[in-house]
Length: 213
Image 1 (cartoon, rainbow, N blue to C red):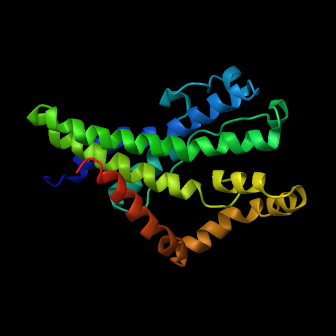
Image 2 (cartoon, helix red, strand yellow):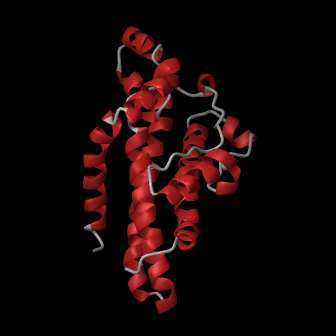
């Protein structure tokens, strides 16, 4: 495919990146509502409209800087308020809410792979942009899916792990949460995180792309 200029890259990245960051928040809101917590519904967050979940810095500014620099894309949606006490079996319910985050990213990665396949039937002028959007959509969603599965609270991977531990061990594990951000920063700047995640990222991207290429 033809290489894109920086402006073109930013233009075709907007939708894939925005959906990758905001759709999991919508999925979490629907799951929480289904499990008995109406908070997301009452605050207008039980929707897949990205406008309800956009955080200007976390959903637009920082991700676009990451795209422009060609590096790792960091982003987040507007904070989603939950009331675990309103859910049936709160501990298990929180794990169910958490697991829909990486699942939503996986589904979107597969949908973007479908967009690449569909580009063969698109008009010539739209084929290359659609292919680039698909490639970026796969890359961003796979990266976010794997990142959110890191077993550190409050990341979904940490919440899922905490739900699987015995009560006392889960309580001890929860004490890690105030330090999770600093642990992640340390792992990033020392290269450990990239060394652990990059092989998995490449493998999953390759598997998904193999479905359409």
